[in-house]
Image (tube, rainbow, N blue to C red; front, top):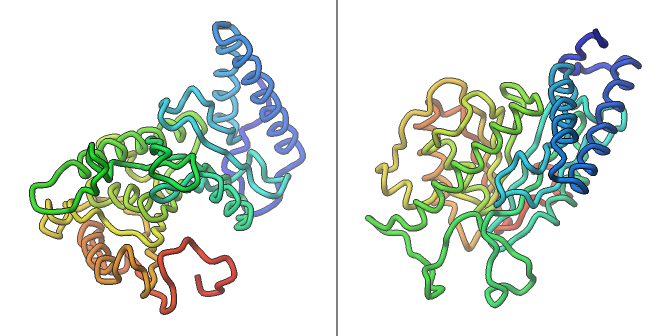
Length: 306
């Protein structure tokens, strides 16, 4: 028996029974996950928690992903439900935020709070590679893929150079598989997951499009936003600037760039946009906005056009 399935929440307020059922499942998840932490070898508790996720998915309730679902390298994450209490667990979209090179999740958790997007849950991840403290001013700091060689010398992009590319491919595959697992367990459907990547984090999500990993669930991504980022130059070199066609169910892509960006030039952003347009099969699929007076910073909350 049980109540009828809630299904994907619409624009209207949830029915009282939907809200109560979501509250019950959210509370059960919290209690059972805490019991799992205290008694990690208790198979009965783990089975009960898994059953909560099965019921939640069947009834259209979106729960925080269980930590054990993510690979060890990506378990340092924050998950925020929708800002409106009535929408929590009944969100329509999942926004995934990826920090830049040498960053961490904390400022992006703050950004999620400022954005306060309706009916949207937010997943904020730390990159899988913690950087040595001697390389950073404000540890802890993380990287999504290798940028330096074993002597801490920056790896320059050039023809035949594959170290950064192979590291990026590994991370893209790891992240794409993680998003597919989260969608499968927590009930996110086609076009309901959106990814915003800044700097190096943006390069990871653009790799999804320029060279889709086998673990990428086609149709899952509804949209991609890249801020102050580019397709990895080694990827463009490897494909001659024209990546393979992505295929059906392409996400929409927005690239936000600054004319004064000293790390990634506007020309590099344009080359990336053109390559992605070729991959996604249309000029209209990729929008590049280059703002005068903007550098390589993250989104500026007080800038109306951004």
